[in-house]
Image (tube, rainbow over all chains, first blue to last red; front, top):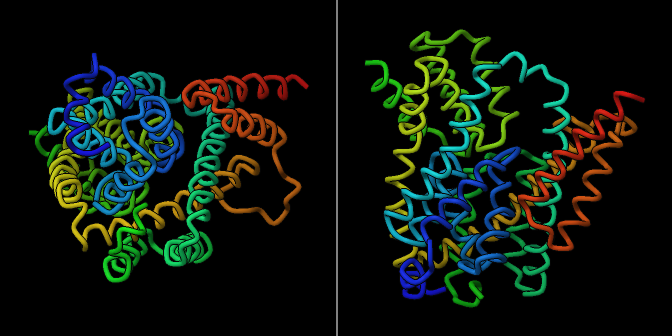
Length: 195
Length: 189
């Protein structure tokens, strides 16, 4: 959606802020195992279900969230909210992101020893972690397939190089982001790459 | 005043935390254990464990839980808000810049370079997740036969479900319940 369309969306969609709050709340409550799990969740909600964003928007906002200090999930929710509905949207999304941990951890703090050593809690979390793995694998396959279809050398080289550097050589993510951003700045200004 | 100190300390952590939630852990430790002696190291290790176990972004979990241990619910709120304030200001500035000028050459270039990078990072996280789901270890073990049958089963079924466009929240809830049920079955066998 263009900036203008997004602006009118906040005004025209019934219960827009409630929808934004509820979806970000659920995403935060179900983020298991680290920041990148939010990508399949964001995509399922905002691309597939609501149609508020497309894949490129999602990747753009995660790129920005990843390239600034702080926690990726929090950064992403602020940027998403701002993108959808300005400062009010950002505040809505941010509060929805920090409320679930506040609730769950208040409960857990009362029964910490029970929670940390409980076998059943561990089973439940193990299951959720497998589900999250399926989500992240699925989104990786989709995005890779899309990129492969475009048959453009530079983005594919960045994917391969960044993957190898991060997964095999454990290069710091921040360094990779700076390096790839610079590559983009120098060699990828053409609109072709954004299609 | 403890709440103000918590707010400021966690804001400082957020500013210097580059690279996501895990990167914030040593910074939080330096503040709450080494500098202020609010918590002991073993209490901090508990916080780390709980933050990893609990659903929700790990950094926020850690800030909330540390704040709560130090000064109750108001402490949790101050630490969390402190942790998010720098991101809020910077996030809005960057979002403005990128969305307003996203179609100007240099910024378009940066985003064009970052999108494939993010795809690679997602794929890399995906493979680490598979290893964790199947072997319950961070790194691929030398002995691959320690593979967890429950992990294989839930992962395979979830993958099929997600390819069939199952709802994500439902899928996560269902896989949690499946993990609990299969774990109990395994215990009984």
